[in-house]
Image (cartoon, rainbow, N blue to C red; front, side, top):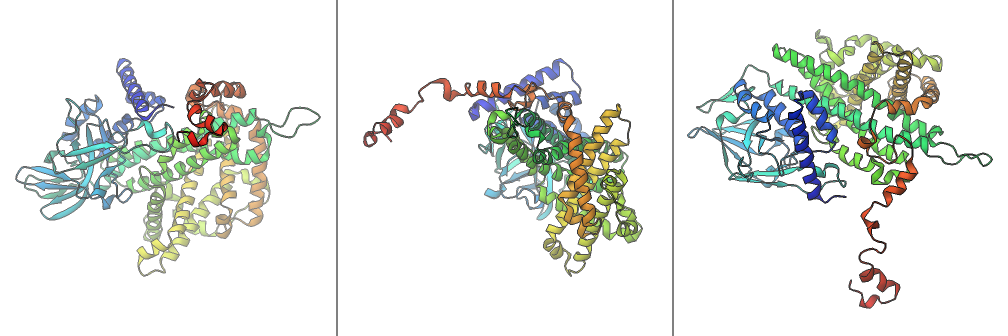
Length: 610
């Protein structure tokens, strides 16, 4: 209920306190990241640590690392990531900001030539950032070399005022009450701002003193390394946000009773209705599935980083496509799931103190930032089509596309399910998901080959290509969940519950996308019906442990911020108490009663000051 200014100042206070504790406790980078996450409020620090520093680390030279990173790590400078413009977001190659080299002064001139070239949306930019990694079109002579990154100082380190030639401010209120309104998303325009030549990020390409553009030996795909890092953190964040929503909805579903009273006895717990279970339990299973694939992505990033240090760039394209697809899929599912959890809580879910409206408002930007989800899936589809086109060349698919190397088998295999319980076999589930993903990709490739112009075909078939990309991403999550279950998991009972949830996740997807599985001849309609039969039985097995499974997320009441999801289940008492805390209840008679309500009641409307 804070005003925008008060909310923003409150965020600054919390960020400063977190930094103070990080220094006092001498926390490691990982520990500091965890502490900042518990502030649980979007802040300028998110972009400083999550984008500004990784961009310099990934795209800067050793000399640039030595100059900029110590200041950034000590927060002597505060940075943001200025890429998105008013007129361009996902189409990075369409950015309009220019960086023109002036050989006479050995400087770049950063300029915003149009209104639409204004940087728009960068977090931390509006009021806090002193510096930015700015993406602009590099121009030397009369030649345009495309978009490159530049380190640009925006504000004075003495009085925080914008430097000459820089117009900067906040873009205004966003969706929700608190949510992302605690972040100073900004706008930025440059009027022929000069920076030294050595502030261009030059690990991938350089401009010499004479103004010559030189491509380094380092592949341009190196920038993927930064993207892999950022997107793997987004996937991990998706599992946390989904787990919070599911925790609230599951606990409340156990407290809430509705209908079904027998002989004056208690009504039925909402969680015992099959309709509630069929909507809620797949979301619970998804929260666990995203947790495990998020853990695997951390390993993948570490592996990619190790390879990059050894100048091995072979796995980068696949890792980039994988993280792009999983970022898209997990954030879309999570955003929809939070809203579904709100509906699962009935009318009370609409209250702000349920925690769900604000969780939804703060989460949904993830579907757009760091790559619009549809655009990212189309990138995945391009990678899949390229992989398919190389199958006959002897080049083996790697990583998450390795299954495509068994092309002949995947085109011929048939599902062996005869009874509902056959769907509990991991090998059966994996075979169905692999065959579906591969056959959908092959189908798209065949249809693309009918077009004389591949780009026309890609545009025309883009909805089908999206579906193929989603099938591939769902296969990754299912396969990584199954791999997790093959590891040593302490406690026989724990492993059994995770197996049940894994089957719920996979069979729910199979039921939801039954058309894909049947039309690609991966399974028969009868086998699809058996999968649904098994799914209903699995819901009954999840039910006894549903509360324990959400308690295992270990979220405190303070962190959940939800009256409906409180640990002790004392929902109605807390709802009643919270109602009286609203500022509207500070007075019995509301402000404005005498001016506007009393004249209506007394039929004096003609004299009312309206």
